[in-house]
Length: 360
Image (cartoon, rainbow, N blue to C red; front, side, top):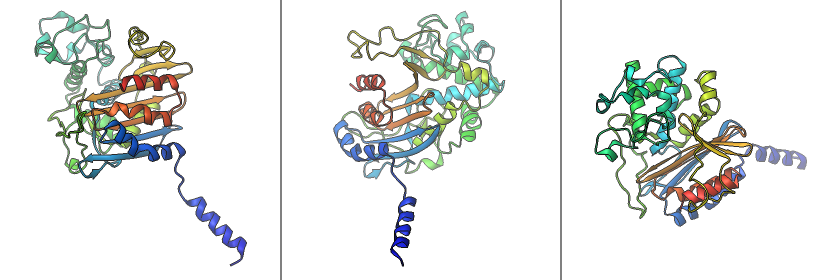
């Protein structure tokens, strides 16, 4: 064979070989050291670029002696909330539930039966954390009670999301798992996502680890919790974020309203003893329906995180750049990994400063 033909064959072979993106290569190179330095058992990451899921990867162990993979199922803790919110926004777009009708038309928690303020509770209020409820009713003696007037201040509340779930179930006559499956999971292709146990869990569930690295048993609910304990893969969640970025499944009106907020949440979150300088503070911060929105110059960082005893997770996207990042960990120390990974994927020093503060 002539030399130029040999060279051409070699060129074709090289051109067909997959090339590892530089940001992925950087994470590959540092992952083992990051896991050792932070005391994190494993992390999985997905990168959305140009509006598409570019790649997914996993590092460390999902449980003792079992490597984490992109098929590992993580308990994403409060990252359940954006999926639950999306389910209800899609139902509202289809006219099956209302964002602004009092939820009391279909559901009233027995603890609020004699409290007329229940009629101020709407789906919009609940999804933007303005119910006035505590995070969990165990904080108010096991009885659901208002800690502030509904519809006014920001009060982060898992109970609010559970209230919204029960309203959606009562209004449609369907269980929430079924609603999420037909509105979100199936249309997006999220085949390994669930609020409750499934036959395909065996051998794939990441064990939670405390701050000392001691593994515990996964917390799997017997019924859906719209606020917590959703299990999914990093690839499924990335497909979800991609769909949200594209405003798929929601009406144009709800797409415009998704990130609207009335309360700027910067006060008390920057300067002083917060650890975040005023220079690094976002230009604006507010809670929309399912996602927090942070403004940094020309960029809007749309984000949510999850935090349980043995899991730490985060997802964010920047619509102006058509990019996004999903990071799951099965460790109480997981926040320590977030700024390390995010720094390879999103060049925003102010947002990275916030992640570093939260990792302390």
